[in-house]
Each structure stands twice: as structure tokens, then as C-alpha cells.
Amino acid sequence: MAGDEADAHDGASGRLESILTAEAEASSPWARRAWAAASIELRLLTRLAAPAVVMYMINYLMSMSTQIFSGHLGNLELAAASLGNTGIQIFAYGLMLGMGSAVETLCGQAYGAQKYDMLGIYLQRSAVLLCATGVPLAVLYAFSEPILVFLGQSPEIARAASIFVYGLIPQIFAYAINFPIQKFMQAQSIVLPSAYISTATLALHLLLSWVVVYKAGLGLLGASLVLSLSWWLIVAAQFAYIVMSPRCRHTWTGFTCQAFSGLWDFLKLSAASAVMLCLETWYFQVLVLIAGLLPNPELALDALSVCMTISGWVFMISVGFNAAASVRVSNELGAGNPKSASFSVVVVTLLSFVLSVLISIVILLCRDYISYIFTEGEDVSRAVSQLTPLLAVTLILNGIQPVLSGVAVGCGWQAFVAYVNVGCYYIVGIPLGCLLGFYFDLGAAGIWSGMIGGTFMQTVILVWVTYRTNWTKEVEEAQKRLNKWNDGKAPLLSAQE
Image (cartoon, rainbow, N blue to C red; front, side, top):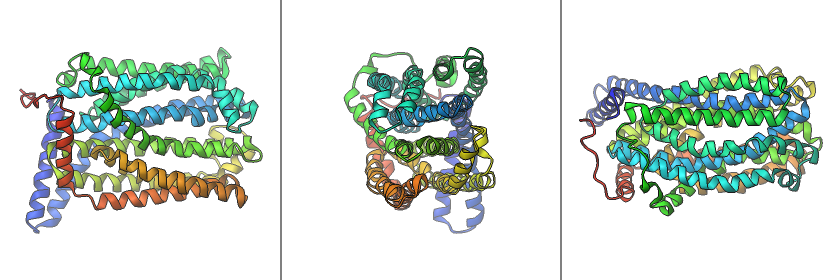
């Protein structure tokens, strides 16, 4: 296998399955076995989730810091950067991350089943598809100003936002390669190197942003160009690690023409993943776009952008747990360990929920001060303070829902969750938000409240479905999926030799 750490990981996973099996067969001593199982699972999750949380939070901090640098240029620049980031850039982020989740399902289950050679092929297929998808997205970015005006945004804000978006075009293709690489590494429980790379890149990003925005005076365009450059540095460093590290010697064997075979079937799985994740990522993007239609849209956008930026940053903690849940579930299903997969879901969900509650309490205590990180405006500060209780509720729900989405990715349920998201988010949440915001004249708070209702409904459904899951059947489905995507190759059972 790919190194001693991976062997230790598999050994711990095997002990967990043995403990859970023994617990099912003998009721005594239940407490000791349960504690031992929980300790092993927490150790496995900590190895996965902690570096993943750091990586995702730091990656988000790059976008957040870019928004902060832009915001201190003025309120118009803050509104433009938030609209460009939350209204346009998140569109590409959600699409690319969603399509990359197909790699997460296939690589995770293939790794658990010891079919190591297929991981590199899945990585390359996904990168080819995502780069092709990036071309129409680049065209969309190029026409961002008329699109934003058509959607009802202020012409002045739309013009400034389009300047910011032009500098993000190179970032699209960095996403196209980065997300398959991240999922490829996470499937093998290799997350710490990405955290180190992201940390180093963030330090460089902050320095370059300060020089380019303030010293060179390149403003919004300079800020977004630096952000694109930083993402490409992350991609280059991660790929260099894959090529050079002995931990990837069995899963990366070089470029192959197989990357261009079976693309249609791979596209269908990627599309299901993209729809599932995009419907989630775009949901609160719609909140920002709708808020631009309110009276005094600049204040509404500024207040919401502060709240959404904080929410997005804290959301990266849940995304880290999402990745951990996906890896643990997919690895255990591929290895044929249904009890370990089920137990992992319980532990990671409870851990993420407790953390989200603690963070929400801190946010509520700091409600009158958090906006000054982004801008000096007192009007914005008051508006943010009024929206903070809704932010706290959103953070708590986001402590559960993303983790269960990670479970869905690990199991390959993307198509089912996509249907749930359509119903809860776009048939219930957005219409209810518009009703409260415009008809009942509750403004941004009303729009957000209605959309929280959609998120709550989706969370309840995912909790119920996960609770009712037959994990033994999921192991059988994982084996069928691996046989289909195997390309006729036998497992590399001798990879540890």
C-alpha cells in the first residue's frame, strides 16, 4: 500500500470492524467495546478531518482576504468583490467541486478494494472533463457585466464586479485540475501535504495582494489576478507531490490514453455529482442575487456579503468533515466493512454538529464587531448585527447537512440527493424567501429565513435516509460499481509487496 501511514490506517480500520462485529455478537461488556470503537474512529477521523479542515479553511481564506483587501478600497469595491465572488465565482466553484466528487466516490471505493491503478486513471479522466467544462465558463465570465445587469443588479456594481471577475478566468482552469487532485489524494487519506501547501500559499497570497492592490494600485483586477495565481501555485505543488511521493507510487503511474476512454459514462456520474453539489453551493448564491433587487441594494449586499463570507469560512470546517465522511464511508464500503461505514457516519456527524454549535455561540457574542473586519461602515455593522441570529442558525444546519452530503458521495447517492435539493431548495426555500422578503417586506432577513426553511427540510430528509440505510446492501452496490468502472482489470492485490 502507499506507505506506512496507509498501512496503519487500514490496520485501525480492520480493528474497528472487529470490535463492532464482536459488539454485535456479544452484549457484554458493551461500554468497553463501544469506547474502543469510538476511540479508533475518532483517531481515523482526526487524521483525515483536521488537515482537510485546515486546507479548506485556508483556501477559503484566500478568497475571503481578497474580498477584505477589496472592501477597504470602498463600499462599492466591497459590493463588487462580493458579487463577483459570491454571485459568479461560486458558480464555477460549485460546478467544478461537484464534478470532481465523482473522483471521490470512485477513487475512495477503488482504494478500499485495493484497485490502486484505477485511481490515476480516474484523476486524469476527471481533469479532462473539467478542463473542457471550463471553456464555456470562461465565456460566461467574459460576459459577466451584461449578465448581472440582466439579472437586475445595479449597472455601477455590475461594471465593477465584471472587472473583478475578468481576473478570475485563470482560476477556472486551476479549479479544473485542483479538485480531481484533491479527491485523488483524499481517497488515500493523504491530506496533510495539501494543508501545508495551502498554508504556504496563503502567506504568499497575502503579501502579493497587499503589494498589487495597494502599492501597485491595480485595484479589483489586481486582487482577482493574484487569487488566480495563488490557486495555480496550489495545483502545481500538489501535482509535484503526487509525482514525487512514494505514497502515490501505486496509484499514479503516469499519463495514459485511458484518460480519454469511457468519458461519456464518466461524464454522467460527474454530472450527477455536479448537480447535487451545485444545487447546494448555488443556493446561497441566489440569496445574494435576490438581495441585489432590494431597495438600497448596496447596503443589503454589503451586510449579506459579510455574513455569507463568514458562513462560507466556517462552512469549510463542515467541508473538511464532508471529505472525511466521504473517504471513510467509501473506503469501508470498498473494503466490505458495513459496520465500520455506519459507525463512521454517526461519529463524524456528531463531532461536526458540536463544533458548529460552539462556533455559532462565538459568532453571536461578537455580532456587533465582526463586520469591521471587512469595512469601517457603521450602517453595515448594524445590518450585520441584525442578521447574525440567522447566520448562527445557518451555521448549525451546516454542521450536519454537508457531512451527510459527504456520506452520499461516499455511497454514490448523488442523483438521489440532487432530487432532494431541487425540492427543498428551489421549490420550497427560494419561493418562501421571496415571499417573506418582498411580499411581507422583511427584506434580506426574510429572504434568508425562507431559505433556511429549505435547508432545514433537506437536512431532516438526509438524516432520515441515512438512518434507514442498509449498509450491507451498500457494500454490494459498491462492488457492482467497481466492477463496472474497473476497465476489466484485476485488483492489485500484491500492491503491498
